[in-house]
Length: 323
Image (cartoon, rainbow, N blue to C red):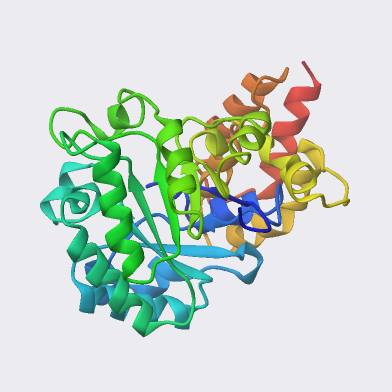
């Protein structure tokens, strides 16, 4: 096992943007955060400031890249390092048809030699860690032996950290959403991988929603990546630093977290950013608490505006206390 466990929030398209990451930092200082997957083509040809900018307060942050061209991935890894990211992660797990058409994501599991070459070139280009996120397998290539073979080839290229979504991906017939739920979770195979490759850092992902589950997995692997639960019930992360990392600073209440964001909200309101661009990431902060419906309703009805900033959020809190 590595000395300190690695807890992270999974890269999620349309979710893990810079505002989500800034918000999550109010819950946890230690958890590793990821960008959404960004393709090499977008970085090479697109608006890099829009795609890559983040604030220092979000660190540590990993830039997740999508692509299959070793030279382009190396170029983008270097750009990411120069931008200030703490690590570069290669997506070999996304099963969407759009990603498959670009010949990257989960379909690359069928081509471990290409992935190894990509990792090799990326590592040559940067001094920060290059990591891989992948599935247990794809389609009919989903035996434990298939995964062992994949990991072995990539590890020989120098990669030391593997984040494994403990489900296979069906590249045909299932949507990305169905691929997150329908294929069964196979945690034992990820545990076995750690036993077979004790020198590698192995992290587990898929269906993990609580600190108790996180602690259980850490008996077998080096790290735990949490996905949808970070969105559906973000307050789970409010005690991660204390429970997992042994920090002794106080756990903030939900209200304290929200109030600490007022300056950030008002800064972006002054830049004419719609309030719900930030607050959509906090709609679930009161999940399973009384008043959550009023909170969500008020923000949903009043957040689609360039005006008001933190005043609207203060009013949303008041609607809860009035109930």
